[in-house]
Length: 368
Image 1 (cartoon, rainbow, N blue to C red):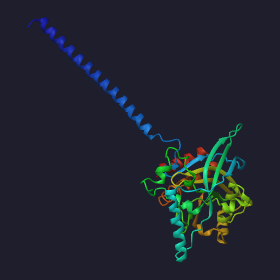
Image 2 (image 1 turned 90 degrees about the vertical axis):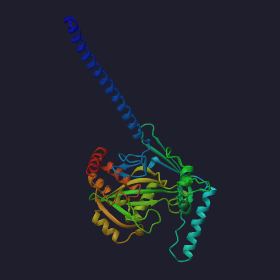
Image 3 (image 1 turned 120 degrees about the vertical axis):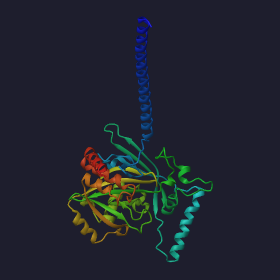
Image 4 (image 1 turned 45 degrees about the vertical axis):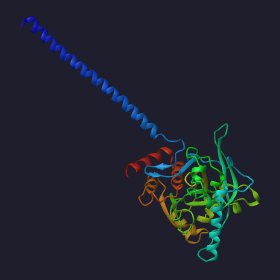
């Protein structure tokens, strides 16, 4: 073999190695670019999948509730003069396919009472929520809330709570009348509940937490707000006036805590909807002026009008970290009334500020 052939062979081998190396680098570069693009697509899809509706219900780490905060963030109170309540004419009527459910409830209560099995459930006059609309004032963008109510009664409320009972065509009231993507849109006959929930804090900075009695019809035995009081047509609309939510809150404080208006300050923080049961609530914060937790406990021991509604009361230091840990306790996390955790969070924000509260809550979640 000549020198020229040898030289050509060496050059060819070198060029082959170079081309092979370049091709390998090119294919790796293409592969990594494809992987980056694929990862980007996966991340984008994952992010989009994690994005939810603007109407997300309240959660704190593993604690998930059905409480939707419709108006208010706890930062500033909603002024009493910004609340406009209107009572419409015409009592709520259930659809024909649900009207029989109410008749069943009435017949059963009559039978149980006649047989002496238990005390009858009083079919008290209530309100159903036709609509709740929120706007802002022109100059300072303060909340303006327009609440429209219709008359109803307790038996209608109990019938409408059977949201997952089958109708003749196989559907349910939930599937037929409710759209999960439009949580604020619902017929009034499915919204026969409006209450005030109050977070009570003593003068020595203790949050009052109550446990509902096992004898109450709705949500027995769960841990709840300090005070929970439903609107009553009989009591709260004397003289055919529309109910005043602050007056309802003061009635609740008197009936469940034996407290008079001169003993506390009262702030309306938010309007909240339990989207699972269609229960509306006005969330309040009440601060006792001079009464400590020990003094409040002594007051309660001397008699409460609605003592039967609660079976126990606990006092929690009203610090963000303490309340967050209390909400997340293993023996509490699945035993909360749906609206209570959001109430306590909003009360903390109102007193301690959002940034401080969220830092403490994040730390409590990380330590689980």
